[in-house]
Image (cartoon, rainbow, N blue to C red; front, side, top):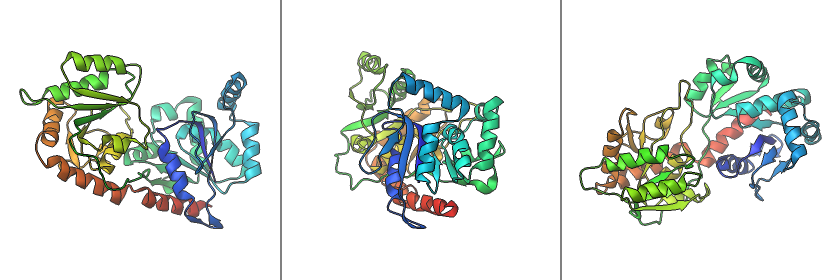
Length: 364
């Protein structure tokens, strides 16, 4: 089987690599699945367990070849590889990549599975892209929506309901948590490409009862990180900025916090964004989340059970939720334990890979 990504990213797609590795232990029709990643470009990511073959690592000629492929969806090197390997299945991990690989899969008569992590009808169903999206819907063997909102968006855009399933990516659940709780009161994870989310988070913790202060763990790196540090110092917050960490390291990094604060909001008219990876990572080490209630967050965070969800209308509601978890003894532990149990039950990578194996077997 080939797993196709036009551009393999280093860490935010680690769940794809974990999924690939998990599937190799499952029985296929002719034995165990042999899973191979293939892409046009990549940041450093290959591992011994699931190496990806990158067709154009770098260079001006590679840029031109990729632009031509995007425009024409004809790529001799990739097509030759597919014909040479003759995979039982090609699995693409976005609608855009499904659109790119669909003509090659069709010509080679290889079943195609596409995972849709998000879907915006205004982007994918207009103009030439709209025609290509419909071609994809016509050929794809199974269309996997990662959330119910993605499924609804796909159905509204004429995806075949008989080929559409909902399947969430799996989470690698670490062993027993050993970090001492309270190393930080509040954890915050961001790409720090702007100050917006961080400034919103500061307003949240500044809305606590008078005189109350919480220590902050900030994870992530980006153009706005140093400005965020300056803003935290200017406002008198005790904050530890640890920079970027890999997704594999994120659970251990978050394990000492009492609560993860998520200040993301609805993105727009057709928001099908999934649950942030930080929510899964925190829950896997029994750290509950306090979050605005948006998109698919409820699929992981159950209000007053595995964390707290509040209306997007005001940050004061989120301040109250943070204080209940970080300022009241025992509340974070009780809800954190529930959060970990939910991850183990509903999102464990072994369970999700087994379900994915059933999908593969249905079309191989």
